[in-house]
Image (tube, rainbow, N blue to C red; front, side, top):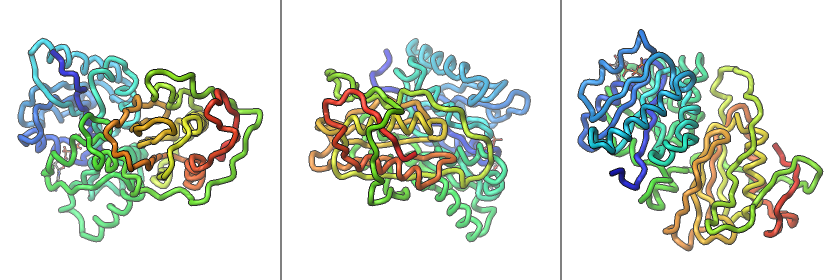
Amino acid sequence: MRPPAPIPVTLLTGFLGSGKTTLLNHLIRDPGMGRVAVIINEFGDIGLDHDLIEEATEEMVLLQSGCLCCTIRGDLVAAMLALLRRRDAGEVAFDRVVIETTGMADPGPILHTLLIERQLAEAYQMDGVVTTACAATGPASLDAQFEAVNQVALADRIVLTKTDLVTAAERQAFEDRLAAINPGAPRLKAAHGRVNPGVLFGISGLRAGADIDQTIGWVNAAAYPAQPKVPPPFTAPTSAPTYGLFASPTPDPLASLSLGFLQPKAPAAFNPHDSRITSVSITLDDPIPANLFDMWLDTLIAIRGPDILRMKGIVHVEGIPHPFAFHGVQHIFHPPVSLPHWPTGDRTSRIVVIGRDIPRDILADSLAVLLTRPASLGPQVQTITADMPF
Ligand SMILES: Nc1nc2c(ncn2[C@@H]2O[C@H](COP(=O)(O)OP(=O)(O)OP(=O)(O)O)[C@@H](O)[C@H]2O)c(=O)[nH]1
């Protein structure tokens, strides 16, 4: 019988030849890793990774003939459901799943699939994105391929590989560049794949049993450039746009949060460069009015949805005793997870947003809206209109 806790899923990504398979080989031999099912995606004829996985895991599934992030997302769903059925039938046993992407994959659409496929979302939970970054070829990959930049930007952990092939100065320059793209992801060095699994797994702030330090570390808001101290002027109400907000009270206090239901606009034009990635954070000492939070999020997603690579947060909402944790990719969000055991003295909200092609000051201004307390946003307001600074 399937245990009630969702099965953690790790997305292992990283550019071509950056050391994903080498890392995975090391990890699956480590007793600390537990029982793991591995799903490997590689392009049909040239794929060799599955032959390079040295030791049989409980289960290994090979997905060929396309890329998980574009053509065979349905295959991923089918493979993960098949794993569940076989586990329920007692044919295989595993406690976690690792999906190794192709080197050219954009992790965003794969995260989408895990979030929006209802059957997957019930049984599995994203634990984190682990990205290998090769110190030798990584700088050129970042220059040439925006997928490589995306892989770094979406990472929860960055594993720096092949540092033995570069000088200390080159390594430092590369690390500085990685930190500029993704300041919130801790970086670890792996010599030929050797790294402690404990630092790569069990890292989601949404997982059952995460303590306060782990959840705060997962958001890691302190690592990001902060929003301006003085919030921008708030202009409201005006005629458009209009967003429906804050339905009538329900037994679940989080159920009234829309977490961004509006449709995004078309994606921005392709233009490879890592300076296209911006990230900002905000910490708020006071709880946020629910309708202000909804308005901010709905507006940000409606206007910039396709360019929001990732968002994470711990949010205290007025009138709700406990905070909730959430994360999203573009306009798709994991259901908010209430944190009932949060210390009562800590009412600080922490939110980070990683965007693409959004100027940093605009992203920061959008977050600073959360510092405002406009009189028009009374607790009984059902629908509001506003101009937002982004
Ligand atoms: N010198 C050195 N070589 C390494 C290190 N880690 C991995 N390699 C080598 O780099 C090469 C590519 O490693 P893989 O693990 O196959 O890389 P990958 O990301 O799975 O490759 P693709 O699946 O083709 O994208 C292999 O020959 C590895 O032995 C390291 O720390 N130092």
